[in-house]
Length: 540
Image (cartoon, rainbow, N blue to C red):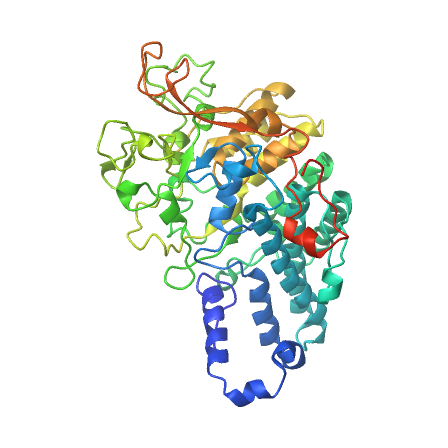
């Protein structure tokens, strides 16, 4: 059985090879050991066994798999929860609209899928010591798995607060009697694991190991965790180490970041790996408008659209280039790369139409739509099945490293000068087909504002917005409000067809985020029912 480890084809073929191996076994093979003991009694022997088990730790599932911190739809959901848009059946919206309860299957899914991955990681770490193999390779594998485990614990504690901190495989009885560790205890553990892992992982990997955890990935997760804890000096140091590796760079073409052909971009620090026909995902089916065969499942809010600056580098409320009657002109090019706008956006030679009174299947009043649709992640070069897309998904990009390094330096009180701006935020804004004006001011409040705005537009729908609004303490401010959709009229006082605000934008949806409650997700009811030692978060 020949394979490469985690390359674009290697990860996928490993799963198929494993399945083929099991399928070819005779009945006698299974008769030799009890089914529930086969892996422990016969598996942990060789380096090949360790490699197969390692793949199992990375696996998050292809196809329709979701509600985790790895798959494309799940991460996009986090941005919708955070107020960048809506899903037409309101599935992620319910997490932050004031109706969330402990029985909700979505937040329960993130919990359960995280603990499934943690179980795989713990099983690996429990048994890897039994394998006879090169010790340096074994140490590196342990670093990979500890990084995967720390990533899960970082996210669980971010969204649920204190959670059970399980570091070994448990019996059923043990699992049903665990208690919650505090958020600080969980993050202390994750932080220590990431520091330890980064020290033993390679800075880069050959193409045959594409997608495997590197020191840069461990440090980037560590940086997120340290920013969440406002450990600014430590976060800046973590990001500085990544930059010093000189492994990652800004990819020139923003429009092709998520194309199926961009499988090995050196902007990608941490990814989920996919391959068409082998291990594909279904996000395009959800994402594409109905005009192009999709379900038009997601609708950006106009509040996100307004966050994109004008081409002079000023917000729409300050720029002389902004025309309220033609609000999408003279804007940051990333707006058109991120959002489909009615009668403006063209995909594969066809114009996107969301106006009411047309026969377009995407006219906004046909369903629960804002009139906008997500353009980001739509691939002009892809002609295949929308339920079988092979483009990799970037969980952390180098642009995040640069913007986070600058933010951490700013919040740490370090001096900010033009060379630092040019090496960070201006590299991101200066991407070849973005080319936004350089930032030249260094005032704390002004720079903080532009960094936050830059993060919102650069990473829209990539899963970072929820993390940001939580750690900035602005979730209630951003999510307890009225949201709007596409522009319908320049004469709102006389317009009667649909409700519009005083600028002529569709009055779309309202959220009633509960301050002091919804900053945390509820512990799932199903967990409370089987484990009386677990306590619920306040307000649920």
